[in-house]
Structure formats: C-alpha cells, structure tokens
Image 1 (cartoon, rainbow, N blue to C red):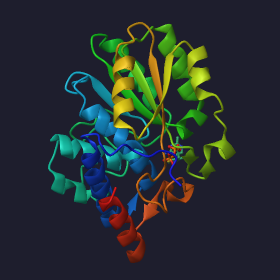
Image 2 (tube, helix red, strand yellow):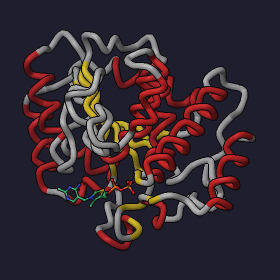
Image 3 (cartoon, helix red, strand yellow):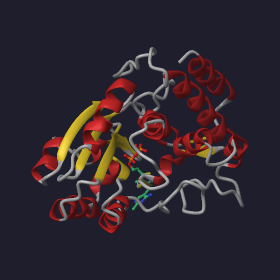
Length: 266
Ligand SMILES: Cc1ncc(C[n+]2csc(CCOP(=O)(O)OP(=O)(O)O)c2C)c(N)n1
C-alpha cells in the first residue's frame, strides 16, 4: 500500500502522470533502467524545474544519484532541453541519454555513475559562485558512503547558504531496504547536528514540495537539507515499496500493460 497519496488537485499532477508514462515507455523500450527511484524522484524534479525559484541557466542542479536519470531526462525534455523523441534513445549506443547521466546531455552539469560524490562536487560549485544556488539530489543509499559525510561537514564549515541537498529517501537500495543494509536512523537529526537546516517533506505532495523548496532557498547562512520521504516505484502498485524494482529489464507484457493502465489512471 502506498505511504502517501498525492493530491490530484495540484496543476502539476497531470504532468506527474504523463512523465511517469514517458519513464515507463523509455525504460521498457531500452530493456534496462532504474525505474524504482525514477518514480520516487520524478515529483521532486517536476517541482524543481517548474518552480520560479530557480533559473537553471544560472543556478545549478547536480544529480548525484545518476542511476535515477530516466526521471531527469523526462523532466528535461518536458522543459525544452531536447526533443521528447530523444527519450526513446535512452541507454542505447551513441545516445546522449546514457543509463547514468553524463555532462554530454543538455541540462546536465555533472557526470554521475559512481555514487556518493555529487554533494562534494556541489560544494565546489557553491563556493565558486556564491550568488547562485546549487541544488544536489542524492539518495538514501548514497549516505552509506563516507564521502557524503565529509561533504556534509564541509558545507557547514564554508557556511554554504546557497547549497540545498535534497535526499530522495525511498527506503530502498540495490540489495534491500536501507533499514536492513545500513540504517540511517535519524537522518534529519544528523544533518542538523552537522549545522544544516533540515526539513522533512512528503515527496509526492506538490503543495508541500513548493513550500519547502522556498523555505530552503531562503536559508541564507546555513546549507539546507530537504529529506524527501518518497515511495519507490510510486504510481505502479506492484512496484511500490518493492526493492526488487530498484532496476528492471524489459517487463513481461502483462506487467507492462498493468503498469501502463495504472499510470493512465494516476
Ligand atoms: C560507488 C558506487 N557503488 C555502487 C554502485 C552501484 N549501485 C547503483 S545504484 C545502487 C543503490 C544505491 O542506493 P539508492 O540510490 O538509495 O537506491 P534506489 O533508491 O535507486 O533503490 C548501487 C549500490 C554505484 N553506482 N556506485
């Protein structure tokens, strides 16, 4: 059962439905992709890219959890960075849209793949351009890595009020639940003790996401962390909170039809 029910009244809800359908089609067409976190993160990305808070020609977005890039590609195509048809080259040879986001793709500022490094990179960007914001999206599983904690510590030392760390906290990682593999326990409390402002939010509620993004952008002295509680596979009942849907190959035809039908009614 879903942890959160997304309010359908919000104007971005229909976009959330159509971009989920794009993600399903592109991953299934490629026969490969990290669908679970693409569905958990897509509402965060829709909120970011449709908000007037950031101008991503000047502000920077860094996708640290590069494997969830199918959702970022869908949002970038929807925002006009490239044509939607290009989505169907996802994870193919000679495509600009590789299975982990790289800097060759319009709108992408960071070549990912090796997890745990995007926040450190974001600190460099934030130090280099204090007048603009840097927004980094990482995952709960990445917080298993020591480098993330070094970055969390350094952001406080440099008083990076222009840095926002968004954590897609879907409770799953590659081999099981985050709780089983490396419990993060009070992640909010940990960021707080490292000197950040911290807010926890329902990652499928566009009203709440907009409110928290604004509040975090207004934090002028402290780096801001947003812990976004999301549902892995959000929108497709058999994928929701099922860590086996961390990634998929081609879905069996009946599962593909079920997923598509559910998303059309999302
Ligand atoms: C340094 C590094 N180690 C391992 C991997 C392989 N890997 C890819 S995704 C993933 C799981 C990361 O956890 P999380 O992002 O929370 O998983 P999700 O939310 O996508 O289920 C791992 C270990 C990697 N890409 N980089």
